[in-house]
Image (cartoon, rainbow, N blue to C red; front, side, top):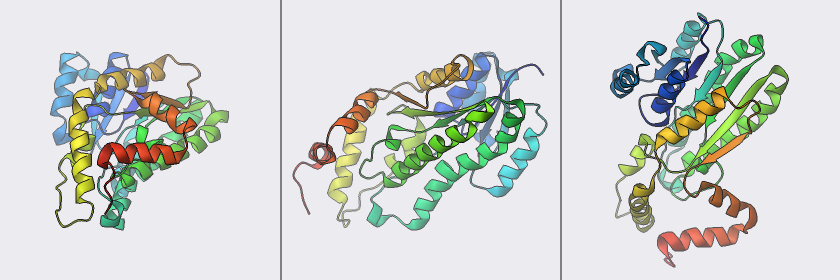
Length: 282
C-alpha cells in the first residue's frame, strides 16, 4: 500500500468523524476508532456521501482499557507505517470540585490524558523507524484557561498541553512533530454530559450552576462548524512542513488567550465572575 496511513480516535461524531472524512478525502488510509463501532452510522453515511468509504477502516478502541489498547497495537502491526495520529477521543465532565468524586476526576484523566499517552506510545515505534510522523493532539481553549464548573476537563487539557510540550522536544531528533489544536466552542457532542446536568436546589452551588447552564445555552448559536477544525487538522497532516506547537481556532479563542497573557488574573476572574453571577456571594 503506497498510501499514507492516519489513525483518528473518537470518530463516532464531532471533530473525530470529520477528521476521518477530511483525511480520507486528502488520500490517507484512515484507521477510524471508537469505543463502540455500533455508533458508526453517521461516519459511514458521511464517508459514502464523500465517496471515501474504501479508505476508512473501522476499529473498536477504548483508550481507557489496557486489553483494548493491546488488541489495537496487535492490529496496527500489519501496517508498514503510521504517518499521522490524531488523538481526539475525549469527553467533558462538568460540576463543581467540592461535589465531584476523585473517581470522576480519574475517569476524566483516563480518557483525556492517559488514553492519549497509551495510543501515542503504540505508534511511536513506527514513526521512529521511518524517521517521520505527525502527532496531532486535540486540546481546547480549556487547556489554556480555567473555567468554573469544568475543573476536571480543564485540568485534563492543561495536563495534555504539558505532555505535548515535553513530547514535542523529545521527538524532534527523530523527525516527528507534535501539534496541539486548541478549539473554542464548536457544534460537537463533547458537552453532552454538561447539557444533561441537573440543578440540585440543595447544593450551595445551585445559583452558580444555573448561571453556567444558562450561559452555555445562550452561546450555542455562536458555536463553530467542526469541519473547520477537521480541515485545519488535514492541512497540518499534509502541507505544513514545520508546524507550530499550538493552533488556537474558533471565535474569541485568540483574544481570550491574549488577554490572559497581558491582564492580571485578579481582573480576569472578576470579569468572569461578574459575567456569570454578578456580585452574588453565598
